[in-house]
Length: 276
Image 1 (cartoon, one colour):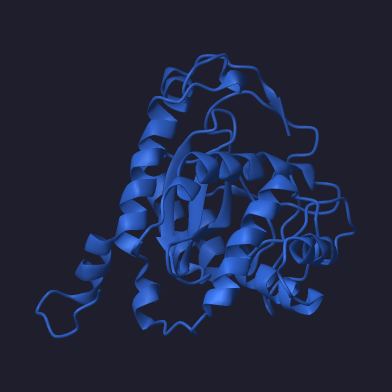
Image 2 (cartoon, one colour):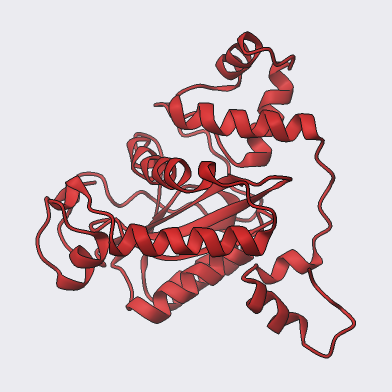
């Protein structure tokens, strides 16, 4: 994919391929066909049953004929970047040296575009292997403002997506994420702080906000990802890009009174306010 012998710079090559710069320095560990099959099934079960942890998922997988231990399920979930969604104490720990910011949206009524942006990452299966998809979303209109794919969970592709959204669409009052190490990294925080954006992170009692993003991932996966077996990262990026164009510009949303995210975002009409 990357040709190190050509005169074309590595930076230019990754831009043309639509992958994160960090991806060219990463040497992925091999994943067995058996584990890829498990990960793909875990992904679908997680969308169907987002409250299921490793114990429940192991039981469900065993009933389907998968011989797998709970520890292995938990290991694969960590690699995929997913966890069960349920009310729990705030036991999330940032990476060493990373600061956790308070949750700013409790009780806030979100009533207009660019009031709140959110960002999250999800696992995307391919025919052989997998990638990760990160997206910046306008909370009020559900519009996907920017997105990136990567073969790693490094912070670089998240930073690139945020930088694009800020360059194209001004800035939000509040930017909300979970407490993942990508979002608590010094480099990621520096981008938001430099734009003078208030930083909010999900914490104790804020578990429902993840459900909103999970619904978006469910839509993208069932309407796009699971219908295709991407043969390569460029193919996945191109196909997902076409779907994002459809999602923003043509797909009506009941929460937006039948409007598309583009109509709600650019026309600044007044869909049903969303309480955070």
